[in-house]
Length: 256
Image 1: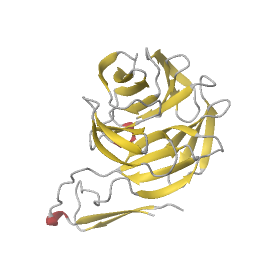
Image 2: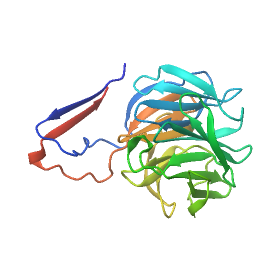
Image 3: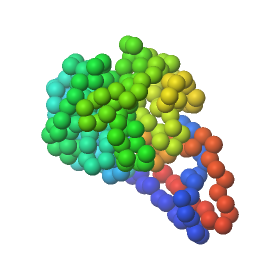
Image 4: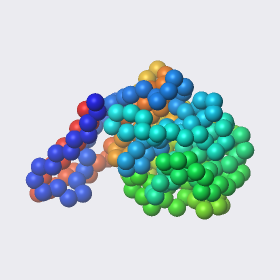
């Protein structure tokens, strides 16, 4: 069983996480079904997995061990790819069959609203300012042809900004609010792209010899869904962590 243990020694205020190798696998568990997981999203409490079954379903899992708590059918039965979470129980689903993004209740799948993306929404990521989709007012939405990212309003999908992205991919992606990068798969690597230019600035090797389909970011970790029907948790620390003052004590974060 995976356990996340935080031991605080001394006086720790806004402490920096332990420096670890970016991309190191710290945990893994199987997808909730024998079908491939096509999208991932993280709240502070749960992991959401979009499975490309017939019909497509979203599974609500315990993030600690992957055990299934519930599931629901997507608003459109097929053609779904991107997944994202924003604060307040909003699960966002991208459907490339009708170029639509759906806002669903995270526990039931009931549709709150939907809007046309104007392109294939293969990847979704919340433009969050903290973990669990906190402070999200817009979604990063990715298409593969053209290889582009749009920042689109949660309320109606209006485009706030856009940029080309260096690598073309029809997979889901994630936003890292610490490194200020968008993580996406390409070839055998996972790349971190500048959120304004779309150029790669960080990278590490994918966690398994399998295609990467889904990504989600939470708490200095990337959650990676692969074609081998496994979900991996990998280290994704700040690229250049600040040195913690000795007066603040030290924090140990173990994922085991």
